[in-house]
Image (cartoon, rainbow, N blue to C red; front, side):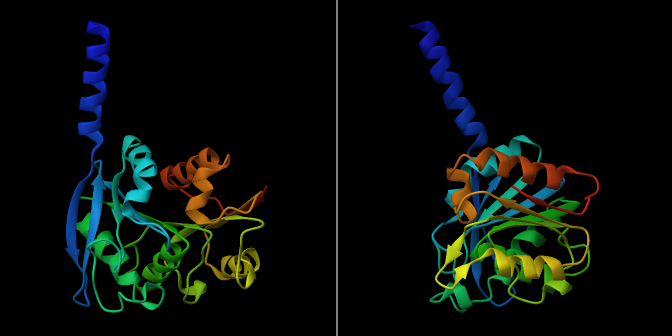
Length: 233
């Protein structure tokens, strides 16, 4: 019984230690976004969710990144949760890159010397557009899951890792050809990883590819320098 109590107590206190705190941040166009904060340190990461998801959907990945020494913010885009701002009724066409920039700048103002963004699907497009609109050096690295910038990829200001499943499709057909076009236009350094399967963006974490995706993200974000390459399979 004592062993069971001790085990439960250890679990309880570990949950307190990793439980995120929630903050609110202003955007430059008058909006307010809410974000969950995990970990501390001078390496910041913003997690930008896809259309069917929210900030809580990143909890497992955020805890893994925080345990690796990153200061992590998982945001709710305007129109999700308590976040609000111009265009919130139609997030797919709203200036979501301003939500990403608000979280990036919060991390910079709170001690992060380097900030990267991991964006999935809708959030990946917003992350890419945030890099395009950012000041040089403001966003160090991008990881785009099943996504590419909405704007011209040649104007990206960040090292970029694209990860997409080969058979990922939407109503217009396979996503890979368009993502590959944007990858080819992206400045160096850059990487493209094409995985087997059809899972889209954050849904990759729910497949047997999930652990590999997390390893690739940690490798890319932790490397002192990035080496350009294109990997299939």
